[in-house]
Structures are given as structure tokens and as C-alpha cells.
Image (cartoon, rainbow, N blue to C red; front, side, top):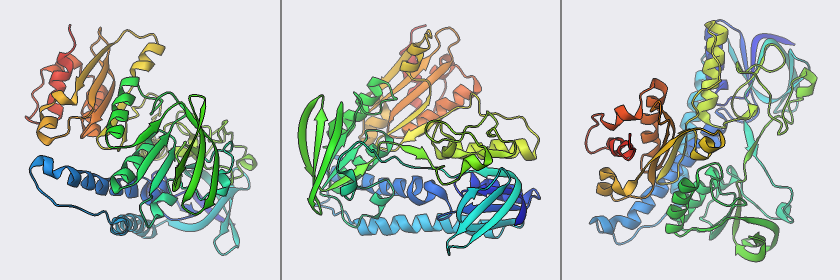
Length: 462
């Protein structure tokens, strides 16, 4: 059994930088990875999907170029070329991360599946079938999450359904893609493949897309997608699949209680993700988990077992790459720099990279109502934003929730081109305590998207 100071299970967006920093701080560190270095983000999440989204945007713009006075007779989507470019970017990121790990003194990288034997011992089943045991006083779990596969749909296990991972491997653009799930992953893929040429149908069981967002924000996104030709069914649920031959799938669904059938060539499962903990044997270490299998942690990211921590999606809560990375910085600074940092009350910004995108931070209007807060809402359609008019895309809106007494910004949602960047400007204002009445008269460069924050807050009467 080999002794280390620290063992990290999983090489995601928390595991990789944490392993390098711990090793550089003098701790003999082991990083265990069951698949490939980089986790979901690099391999089948942010990096490949946003690369493909960029190609889809160019296809969309090519289709609109005549409206902008640039005449192009036609264009063709080459999915193989898109995949080649995407794969190159993924491999560059993955190989760069692995090389940095291998070149870091005091840091070992082992490929295999890890499981706990006790709170200090980890067994690794190596890819060749052999096992090795390692021990350390500090262990960090960064195993991420995986696609939830519904168990209540008859015939699902009899069709070749896609996940957010396997859809990236398609060699041809689907003729008709049926997307189960009207949230961030499903909508990004739905719009992307619509722009590549697929017919798209989205099925969402809730009354609106993006069930966690305010109704007006969800409505704006819905209008954008339907405007591009996507078919969307809310209050809908798939009950059964039947596939007679490859590429011909019949789905039976209930839409607002009425049964109907739809034929498609491909099905994407995008109903959510769950923490990857089932193979870790956490019970042998005495580590407590929640109802969805998530590792339970305190505000310092430590489990109920001293010296064992969980970072990123595996601990439940906001499942974003930037949260996993922030988890790493908190744990490292607390353990190595003797700081007293906590995840409590940290901002949780996020973006959905449809086009135009959604940028969100802070509370929604629904949250404000549920919390019984006194609040006001500032809204500005992107049709009133000069930069949006000039660039030819006025879809979406800016929205902010504010405290009328303190004039602090409580929450922001931006649906529009560069929505994430505009949101980030207001996030920094929120973090710095800059009130909306100051932003109202701030001097921004003209003509930028953020300049219209002046007009957004002028909609509020003092």
C-alpha cells in the first residue's frame, strides 16, 4: 500500500488544479482518473459543445447574411469538419492538462476506478484488471455527475437513445431529433442541431421551458427557439417508445393529458444529471450522502468524515464548471494558506449558451415573491438597445430585481447577444455594493451592450 499526503479522485475542473497546487505546496499527491483527464467540461461538456455552438451560430448567420447586405448563394453544414475542429480543441485542452500533471513534481497520475476501503484507504481497479491500494490522511472527491436516464418510459432501453456525451459522436445530422427535457442542455443541443439542419421537437414536463426561471425570461427564450423553427411541447411527457428499424422511432406522449404520437430519427435524453457516487463505496468510509446520491458537505466542503472533502457536481447544488473551480480555490486556500473561507452566500452566476444566450445571477422575481421581499423590477427589451439594433439581433430582454430601499441589485437575467457578459458587469456591481441609481448615470462607452444598463435602470422611478 502506497502512502500519500493527499489523494484526489477525479480529474475535473477542481481535481486537476487542486492536485497541482497541493503537490507544489510540498504534499505528496495522487490523482486518480477512471476515464480521461479533464472531466466533463473539457471532454463532453463546455469545451466541445460551445465549440459546436459557435459553428451553429455561423450557420445561422450565413442564413441571414442577405438581410445584412452580404449576398451568399448558399452554404452547407459539414458535421465531420465541425467534429474535426471540435476534437482538435478538446485534445489540445486534455493533453495540455495531462502534460501539466505529469510534469508536476510530487504528483502521480493513476488511471483506474477508485473505491473506498476505509476513510483513509482507496482501492483502484486499474484498466488492466489489477488493483492497487493507496492511503492518505486527506482525500478529495471530484467525480462529477452523469446523465439521468428515466426509468418510467416504456421501451426506452430498446432504442438507441443519445445523451449529452454520445450526441457529440454523431457522424450525420439527425433528420428529426426529439429532445426530452426543456432545460439548459436540451435547449443548447436543440437549437444547435436545428441550425445544422435537423427538425427539432422538445418535450418538457413542466408548464414552461427553463422551469427555474421567471416566466417572462422563459417566454423570451421560447419565442427565440420557436422563431427558428423548433417545435416545443410543455406540460408533456413521453410514456413509450417503439423502434421497428434504425432511424425510425415512434414516441407516444401525453400533452396536457391528451395522448399523441410523434415519429423521429433520434432521441436525446436531457432531463438532468446525478452525482457519480454509486461505485465509490462511500459507506465503507462512513461518508454521508443525500437523496440523489450527492456527497453531503459543510460550508468548507468537508464531509462528515474529517479529512475527506467533496468538490464540484458530486456534492450536489449548482452544477457548473466555475463552481467546481471555486470549490478548489476555497479548499486550497483554507488548507494551505490557513484562510477561513466558506461557500456560504457566494454568487452563483451561470449562462445558457443558446443564441442569443441567457446570463443569470442572484435571485429571480419568483424567489423575491416566495421570500416576501419588497422589490422592484427593471426591464428593457433588447429592441431598445442600440448595439442590438445595429448588429441586427434584437431578440430578448434585460431584467433586474432591485431593493427599492437600499437600491441594491438582487438579481439579474439577460436574454440577448452577449447576455453573459452584460450579466457579469452587474454581478460585479452586486459584489461591490454598487447601487442601481449609480449605474443609471454611469458613463459607459458607446455603443456597447452594457451602455444600455443606463436605460435599464431609468425604467425605475425613485
